[in-house]
Length: 350
Image (tube, rainbow, N blue to C red; front, side):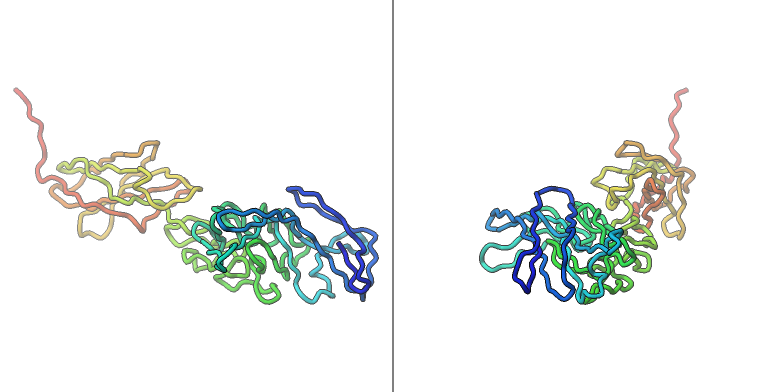
């Protein structure tokens, strides 16, 4: 509805039906005076329901963007580019609904565990409420510099200003877009910061603590042992050292437990592909390496280390190599095993 403040009169009204898609409402042939003040208002349908002493409202319609047409009618410009606009305006992104505690005057506790990039959960809901510019079950996907919304299909601007100067108000709260901060939401994040209103800190596992200001991805890579691009998880490694099956005069037979309960680290985007044994005489500095072997579908694999010194203590560990060719050599757990002093001979009956 458009309302004339001076005449106290409604001059335009329209009703939109419920739908899951983003609709564009174009107001044609509306004559507005330059010096006159007008209000554009939206009446939202907010069904109410109650669960476990909480009240919930689920918003069925929200404002995504207000734009104005040029005189040529060939382009649409966001209102924040108008010289007459003195303050950044708010846009609402399709979200999950607002929440409030029904009684006792207590604030609902935000649980940030299990959510990335500043997202949080509100009891009793199990899904993450994501800040503008992030989406996914745990807010793991960054929309980038000019996109927003539950599916990242909302576009802030067709021009080079992108989301600069906007204030995004969603169920998460009101905040500057990703990569921007300041009272006018037009200041870029300083180095080491990212996210909505630049409130997030780049992972300490990013190389030189540098990350993309819009998505938090470690754009320059990770420190050794961590999985790109978020650098939050280490590459897989064994929790327990290799096990000794048997000891011979010049060899050790070793077993690796590749059960998931004995592996820490990893990421959904990588899988184990190979393993390699590392070994050395106890007290020496450098390690020897075995051949690189395939990991098939077995949870337990065996390998024999030959050409060892008899009657000698050895330190034995293993690295796990993933399908992208990387590995974690920072968290290797070693076991200590001895070769036998005497060669074993089999008896021969004459």
